Length: 104
Image 1 (cartoon, rainbow, N blue to C red):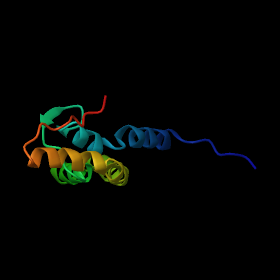
Image 2: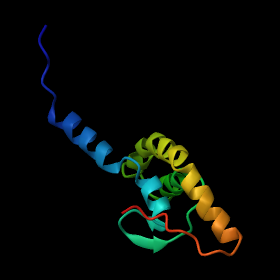
Image 3: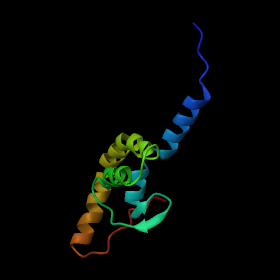
Image 4: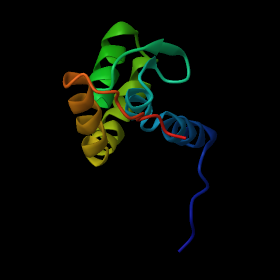
């Protein structure tokens, strides 16, 4: 059985998908409105999915397809990081100094 070579379009699409994976969750954990572009927004539970949905509705095709592809990865990332975001939310609501959720 022979393997078919992967065409350039498939390789490009897979590369973009890998690069864009989890951007919403990373922006949420870093308290950013946009990944790698700054802006501040508080860390929220499931904030990565919320950010992805906001980005999907704010840009036009085909750019928004990157954020559509990012949704499942952000959902998984948001569930895994839920304890961290809940701790940050609790600290803010009780007027404590929140511990940083920034990934280092």
